[in-house]
Image 1: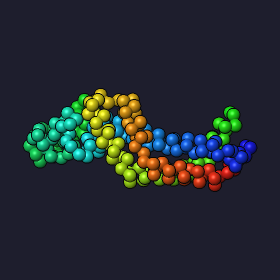
Image 2: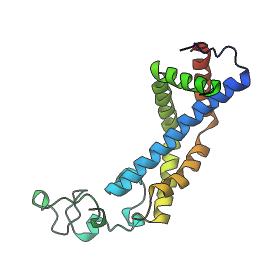
Image 3: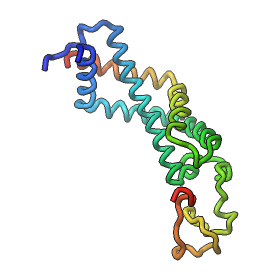
Image 4: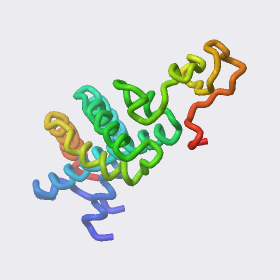
Length: 97
Length: 96
């Protein structure tokens, strides 16, 4: 393949190439973030990973403690606290299962 | 393929072959976390998800709402540093 020389390019063209590479890097970050969020929402852990402040109530999810359920963060079934291992773990709200 | 497209393709290949693309991505990742970009975007994300509703947020909604904000939130300092590294790469690989 014929060797390509960047030395012969004018400054504007080189700068345009640098800008394209930069834009590609930033778009990659933004899109990657969107996919992470989407996955977190669909798998049911958005409020754990992305909403560090505030409460799950903001997302229309009833906090586990209010249901009187097991205190393990992934358990959402009602019952006495400490029922633990015998209960089926539910990571996502029912609509995502 | 015209000369411009050939050149862009060669540059991108070189970026990947030399490992510089990965270094740039790592630098970008570090800088964006350090400057709070990720935290600001998370806060914006939370607003978007609450508005759309947890069950109704589609990937298209997220891309439409988050991407422009993400681009706008990149600080000038990060912008300058990344561009400088890219220019250095281009100067070091004058012949591809």
